[in-house]
Each structure stands twice: as structure tokens, then as C-alpha cells.
Image 1 (cartoon, rainbow, N blue to C red):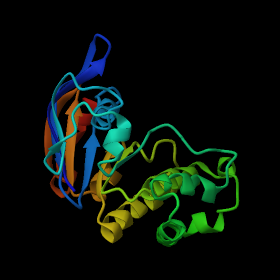
Image 2 (image 1 turned 90 degrees about the horizontal axis):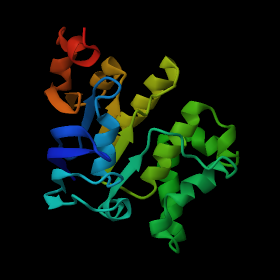
Image 3 (image 1 turned 90 degrees about the vertical axis):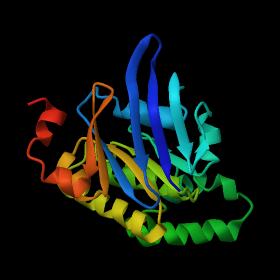
Image 4 (image 1 turned 120 degrees about the vertical axis):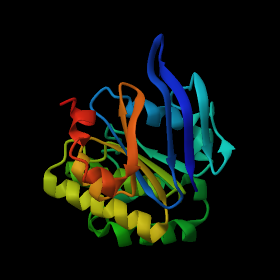
Length: 237
């Protein structure tokens, strides 16, 4: 499935954060949204998922408009969202956290078992940790639980907000390897916001840079990776 955002204006209260932002995440691709702190990345993702209501503009999934839908309605359109803040249930086992992501399949035990096998194939460390309280996991492992739980709902589009935030460089590389594996094995369309510019560009197909809530530059990730002037768009230098 593809995701299209066109001329979206959005914000909080009287404050307008996004001033007509547009992007397209093509089917089965990894699209990255780059920008400095305060550029509007999280606001855009929250608007797409219906956490914030767009003031104007259009958001569509496979050509079907979802602008103005509430989060649970967007979720029903096969869109899953992993928020920037940690969201594991710390006193529940890893397996129990994952099973919560499969509520749409409740009653179908074989389907849930099948999804767990699929997820454990991508995240074998979670199989090893399945009987451990999620709150006891490392930050990187907790992030894997969050992504894996989102995948349990069998989404066609996966939105990730700053998945590498607060993680060590070695863990960041491993996490992006998993993102690529999810894209390649499951064919999921992935849109992610990220500040780790080089790693994000190395592991995506297309990138958009936004600055102060406006589109600044976009292009194939490989091309932007070679653009020596990219730093001025993101860091203002």
C-alpha cells in the first residue's frame, strides 16, 4: 500500500507547525523523513495517524482519503504506528506484549501462533526473551518489542517515529537492519522520521527533508547521501 500526504497544514491549538507539507511513501518502500528538532517530523506523523487533526490538505492510503479519521479508524486501514516514546507494558511478559498487537485476530489462536513464528524469525532475541517482563529489557530490545507488536496486526504501512532515539550506535545499526528485513521479507511500506541522517539514508529508498514545517528538499536516498550541502538543510550550517 502507498501513502500520500498533500499540502497538509497542522498544529497544536493556535500554533501552526506544518505549513503545507507533502510526501509520498511508495508501496513496499522505505521512506525517511529528516529534519532538525522542531522541524515538524513528529507532528506530521501524528497528523497522518489521526492523533492530531489536519487543518487542511489531504492524506490518502492507496488513493482512499483518511484525512480527519481517528487513530483507531486509521489503524483499520492497515496502518500501524510506533510512537517516539517508549510504550511497552513493563510488567507483562514479552510474549504477552506481542499478543496485544494481535487483538484483531483474537479467537484465531493458530493465526496468532503463525504471526508469532513470523515475528520471532525476524527478531529471534524476542523468542529468547518471551517469558521475561518487558520492562527488564534493554532500550534496544524494548524498541524491538514495540515494532514487533505493531507487526502482529499485519499492517501494510508501518510508521516509525525516531526509532533510534537514545540507542547506542551498534544497536542503531542492528535496528535498521531489522527495518530493512521487515521491508524486504514482509513487503511492508515503511515511513520513518529520523535524526540519524547518514544511517537513515543508507537504509531507505527515498527521503524528504523538512525545515520549520515546510518541504525543503527530497530525492532518492542514495543521491541525498552524496549531497554535501545536505547538512545545511538539517543542521542550519
